[in-house]
Length: 428
Ligand code: AMP
Ligand code: GLY
Image (cartoon, rainbow, N blue to C red):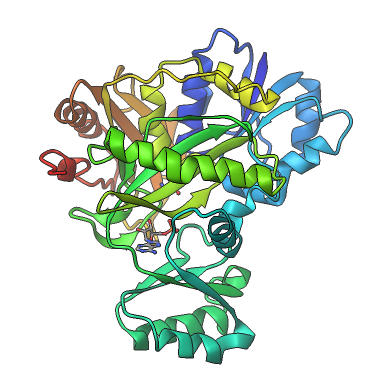
């Protein structure tokens, strides 16, 4: 079958790399893609949110399966657009409709969903600009740290953790009144702080049944030892030592099952990935957030560990025939290191020539923010590449990833040196 992936990051390169391996995949396209996806698929110069052009392309190329990588086209309603068009509605889509995508698109919606369905999460209250006084009064009753969350999509920057009530009051005013995150902070959640360790859990569902993909740990801060500002993700490891079988069983029973049941109860026909950000608080799982897509860079660590034919699973998701399907997971470890532009997550220069690219298999080099410039590949984004090493132990996978990361160069290249280090001698 012919398959189209939407997106242009490292996540989409990893998805394309895995999908390409399926004997069921005939032609594979990525819109708009990047120089990395061009190695395993054909790039199509159509933007991820240009639904009419994407639709025309799907008809022209007889696309049977559409895999949506990022959240923006989902929240904007790509599934609804395809389902409402008689010429497109036969196409199987991996990714929820507009309402389901609100699990990610609105933190207020997802919090209400969790509360309604008995899914463990931090206590929260939501306020709008007209309720500033009430929000201030409420903050006066909260014990710091106080978590403030913009309701809408804010490119991963919408969560601020304040260490005092005074700071939290200034921050919420900035969000609600000064519209710090634009419309995304028209509503703000004030949330209880959860003290624990985070793990990313990935569920693939057809709305009735599900499979759980390998879990991963993301490293969000720019600096070694989890210091400095937040980023989109500086690295990932899978599996995660503290996500023991006992803990994952609790996640499945207390989070995944009630989530799927809740979607059904609410009449949300959810077909796609659900990325559940979980806080492990002394062995009890709490949901921090839902995303309606896979994680980046977690996907670059997760895909190399999936042994099953991913297209089989994605087709079953699209068709609604996931019942009875299982997923085979490689016990090997994977470590992914994000190679970023100097200055990221602040300002950075683009257009630096990347040296040392080549084939390092089995260690994989996934492209994120790169651009082809004649015969050279140059930097085009903050997160430029993701290097994924695999090995029989965490040490081995780290050594392989870092050996390759060390061979790639450009002016200003930076990466964290400690991805996975905290888990080497982790005491559960
Ligand atoms: P999010 O944008 O929802 O992924 O949140 C960004 C980060 O803020 C999360 O990855 C957590 O590290 C942190 N965070 C969010 N909510 C909480 C909470 N209730 N307690 C503690 N940390 C949180
Ligand atoms: N790495 C976190 C995310 O994709 O949201």
